[in-house]
Length: 124
Image (cartoon, rainbow, N blue to C red; front, side, top):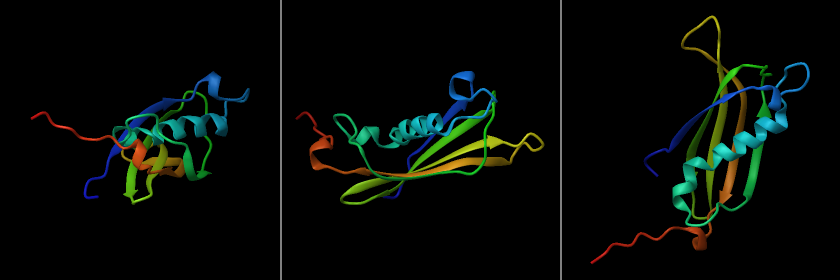
């Protein structure tokens, strides 16, 4: 696979996804990250994307109420049996314009099933 498919999705920490002290709840972030991880591979499936085969999820830092995060998903590997998607959640550092803190990282594996692949058909 010569080209990597990237997706960037903004995410704001609100009261709905944080606890009473304003900390982002990890299970809410995981749900959003899992959803964004499917974006780079949606075009490869005709029906719904199958369940995860494998995943790794690691929180590096906390995020707080009103933080503006960016969820970046990238298709990093396609094999005969699965797709691997790397996801990184970052937050800009307030004292610098070009530097970001990593909030969490994840690696997801989706099964590549021949029944799910789209067929390209052309009219003659």
